[in-house]
Image (cartoon, rainbow, N blue to C red; front, side, top):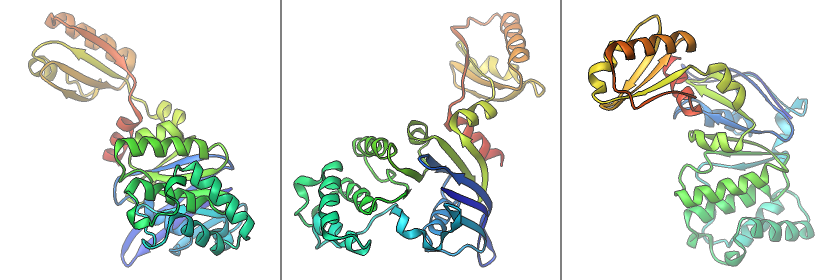
Length: 299
């Protein structure tokens, strides 16, 4: 559905997006991940054609993306609506902007207000809506014209835990019928929702692939050793040829090794030699968040 080739954006002397390549298939749900300032919002602005690329190419269904706005639903990070409008009036307004006829607008409006749970307040002014209600209304307005691609910029970043959970449940339903691209810095949301992730840092694309592929390709063995007075014995387990890194508390050490078999044997030998009263010795899988943090720090 969407192909991005060597996408580049420069503001003055500052390179914000640096030759980024990725593709999104029909029906996929894709997360654009990265710390603040990574270039996520800039990429989204170029995709929805409100910022012009300095270089590169964007293709929508194999053609230039100049006419793709009508096929895109967009939810900005901080949606702003006319506070004097009602929720119903806003959807009618957005439907007219999308060249929908009255019958289609009425049908879609009723469907969407019910879907996002705003039917009881559809005749109330938007200025009285809570932040979570405005996010729900933002989803409805983005879907009014049945877009082929839904793009969202940090859709849950400003929501409380309950509102965030409700939004994620809505997105699970939407992804069954739509292609979705959304930016976020909440990696758990990406793991829960997405088929594929794109990790961006300082304008460069570090990772492009399925969550399973990213984890399997970038996983490093991590051992957790729990025993009293870890601040005394853990430093003795540092070995530059075996240990990649170590984190410790007073009761445990989390040791990332370069090779599972070599690391396990070396650690067990040292545990026996030091006669540690270990309470736990476990090989654990790194989470996507741990992989993300390590890759960003190393890049």
